[in-house]
Length: 180
Ligand code: ADP
Image (cartoon, rainbow, N blue to C red; front, side, top):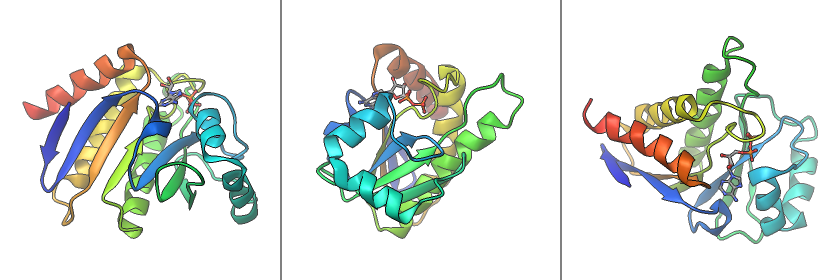
């Protein structure tokens, strides 16, 4: 699914984010930037050890929830990796939505700063961090739409969903944006 907003486009794809040929791939990292399971593990396995070495050297204090940091992409078919730290879902009263939006916005700012024309991101926080998928889709896609709508440059933002259920949730929200 692809929807145009201003000069930019939001796309949804079903599959493995490590296979995406884009300028920047977003990792759903943890605050220690220590690697882990899920998409983080898949990205580090595919990127090779140089990315973890660079991350440790450049960001020894990690990265707080709501923020993102940049490294090279190692063996991945991308120029950059953005390590975004989403919130752990604790029921919804701990600024979870705000923190999810903020780490997505930071990735979009990094994409602009590094002259990226395409960016792929996963459904941050919806795995081990248990953010409800419908609410994640609403916040993540709305934050992307707000950023690209009216932005002076074109950017392809591709959200890569690993399973059919997540794809369906994101597709429903993106469809609802077309009619708004
Ligand atoms: P978090 O800790 O931020 O919740 P997870 O990696 O546990 O991160 O899950 C985030 C989302 O990424 C989940 O929806 C999960 O299904 C998805 N995911 C896992 N592996 C991949 C992959 N290789 N490509 C794209 N998405 C993936």
